[in-house]
Length: 149
Image 1 (cartoon, rainbow, N blue to C red):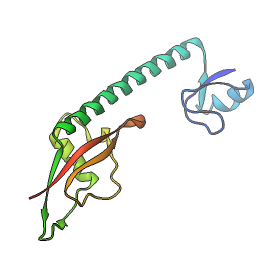
Image 2 (image 1 turned 90 degrees about the vertical axis):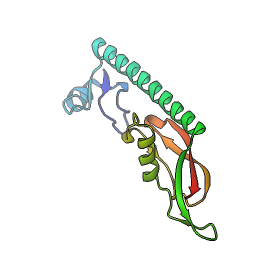
Image 3 (image 1 turned 180 degrees about the vertical axis):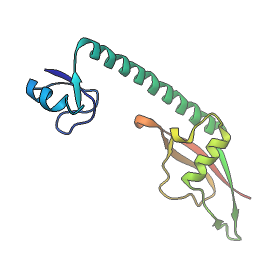
Image 4 (image 1 turned 45 degrees about the vertical axis):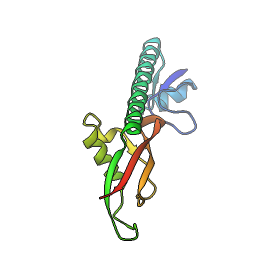
């Protein structure tokens, strides 16, 4: 019997996978618990429509990230930090700072849409490439410029 998984199930598959399982397993375990549903033609067409919609959404996210990367290539996000006598920096630039600056610089961008991946806060002057990721593994790098006040 063919079923469509409604959630990930270890050993069987991931959400939205179409699997062929024994009829008793489907009727007595998977379907009553809401883990799967029958894979009739209507459900398969609905799954196909959802997959196409999801694909269009991911394409739009990729375009949004490419636009963001292109914008920061032209004009990087600028952070001004105080510097001591021997060019020692007071303070640092964290992922939280970068997110806040991006939200201020690009008003249409929602902070929940992306994740900044800085291992350690930036404590050096100059231009830095910061990894950024959106959903489903869409990744890129934005430019951040750290200057003296």
